[in-house]
Every structure is written in structure tokens, then in C-alpha cells.
Image 1: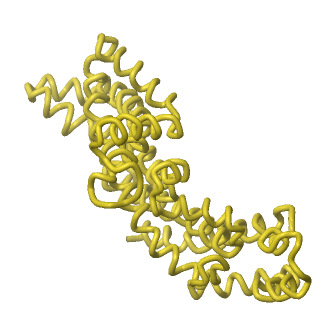
Image 2 (image 1 turned 90 degrees about the vertical axis):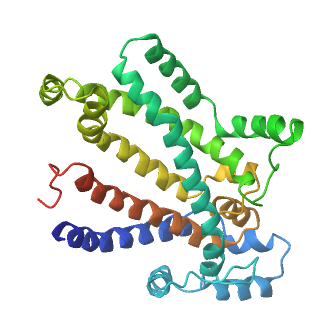
Length: 306
């Protein structure tokens, strides 16, 4: 409880820092957002009206104070393109990104953890070397290549899955594989490396000397203690997935916040870009906090409250 309270209190200055950074990065970006939105041929009256609507006619410090006040009240402004509140648009898009991230993480775990465990147990064997090669290929193949290849083969040629969009469970298969493949490659090597070190510990030798089954030694005694590096990577990658896998969502026309950000940039929707970037940044902060809390659950020896 003490640790949880400290982490929640630490979230306050962290979130403030993220909000401040997002605000100034957006406002210090070269170029006039009003001119970008309306174009060079817009009349001066329209520019003045839009500048007033966005609050850009105020001093920068006043804009910052107003922005902090709106964020505290969960008001991220109003989208110029969609004519709706930015928070409402993000709330509509976020579930699609969350479900895709969750399915992709499950796919990555199913693909990565068993081979990683077996590679650690059979260190320097043919399987270990094969796993290393496959992992290298998985990391090396970019999403913008793998996604279209999967669409060409499984959608256009075989007709098994939808080409794009979100229309039932079948539509999750190709984008989740696209996202999960690279993550699985990383998790496999991290699992193998971490578990290999744990298997050399004295307490593992003692457990084997007591006659415990090898499966129990590996799963109950070794794997749990080897999971902290794995959970760290999973947490960081899950935060990235929740933040919106921009390339994958664009390829598969997935209605998530990653594609929303691209659309907002293309339409020069200044408030929506700012709100989406803020939500993406805050997602990382929250996920990292949850990962820290998970450490104490996995390994009671970890005492983060000190």
C-alpha cells in the first residue's frame, strides 16, 4: 500500500511534465498552424477567427495556463475537422486500439514464451540456434513489409481474412500477427537469456537434487524468477501498442488512435493532434507504473517501497 501511494503521488508531477512537454513541443514546432489548416489563400478574417477559436491570439503563458485548466477537467478542445470534442473522438477510437494491442500481446506470448523456455533448457542445441535465427528474422522484418505480404497472401489470394477494417474476430488476425511477430522475437530472446541465468543458480541445483520433476523446477522455481526482464519488455511494448501502432493501423485501416493521429495530421486538425499525442504519452506513463507494481507480485524479494 505504501508503494502504491508513493507511485500515485509520483504520477502527479510526471503527468504534469508530460502535459507541459506536449504543449510546448506542439507550440514550438515551426510553422503557423492556422495557415497550415486554412491554406495560404485563406482570407484574413478566417485566419483571425480560427486563431481566436484556438486561443492562439493569447500570450503563450496564458495559453499554457488555459491548457492545463482544460486538461484537469478532461477537456482537450474541439476537433476542427470532425466538429466534435477531442476527448469524445479519442474515447471512440481507443477501444479498437486496446483490443488489438491485447490480442497482439497474447499472440506474441503464445509464440515467444514456449520456444524461449525450451531454448534456455536446451542451450546451444539445434533448437536454440534455430530459435535465434527465427528471432532475428522476426525483428528484422518491418511491419510495413509484413502487413502487405499477409494481406496479399491470406486476404487477396486465399480470401481467409478481411483486407482491412474492424469487422469481427477474423479482422484481428492479420494485424495482430503483424504486431505480435516482432514483439514475439524480442520476448523469445529475453526469455531465453533470463531463464538461462536463473537455471545456473544454486537453488535450482538444490531443487533438482531433491528429486523434483524437471517441469516443476523450470516452471515453478526458475521461470517466475526469470520473468522480471520479460515483464519489463512486455510492459514497454504493450504501452507502445496501446499508444497506437501507427503503421499497422494505417495499413489495415484500423479505426484506432494510431490511424486517428495520422488522419489528424493530414487534415491539419491542430487540437486533435495535440490531444492524441497527450493521450499516447500518458498511456506510457500509466503502463510503466503498472509494470513497477507487477514486479512485487512476480518476485516478493523486490521491495520497491524502499
